[in-house]
Length: 308
Image 1 (cartoon, rainbow, N blue to C red):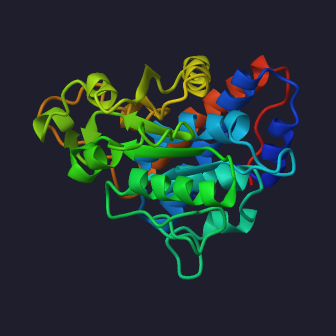
Image 2 (image 1 turned 30 degrees about the vertical axis):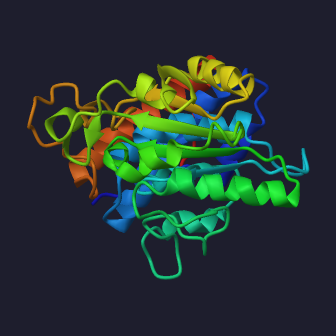
């Protein structure tokens, strides 16, 4: 593998200090996080690029523009991923925001470093991932505890397509509406690939919107890579007293053209769910992401990206 590149802390600080509109700033921040996610997984030799990339736009928007956190407020909203294996993207966001030490960027899947799946031993990880399908139930338990503690924080849970085949997911929806859990928002990273194959080739999920609605949930749907559309969904969810689900249509491997399943036929194998890219794939991917970042920086009237 040739020398790996990563975006240093100073570049994230520069981007976060820009007085640009929230959408442009978030798009640029997300591109930088994609570069560092690629670095972490390549340096570790394993990880989950595809689903980290499909969910990164959503995670970045939540942390930059939606989640309430001290010192701005006494309430600390919570986000966690129920599927869990997309955590390299989440680590990149937390590191970029200074919510994890920057040195952790080099420790993915190493002893004493960042685990390959979420673990509560890591700062800002509120739950361990797994077993798959348990995330909504965990969030419901947290909300019940919040009521006893007189807290009004909101909880956002990311789920994956494969997870929605777990019966636990659908059982966990029951009772949330009757219990008035309007503080709960479930976001489906609907990239339509379960691990290495199209979900329709494994076990089709059917019409997701009416399935969630049948349990009394408020449901929105949008392009999960379109920040303004996702923000509009979040606003609609805030205005409804019921628990909410956002079906975010996403693309696995988003941001790197050859990692997106553009020409993937039925029963074909999707190659970028797990594992590290080859040296050639790494160079092609980082070049594409660097070009995108520089175009975004130029549009904001600032200098090109500097690597360490």
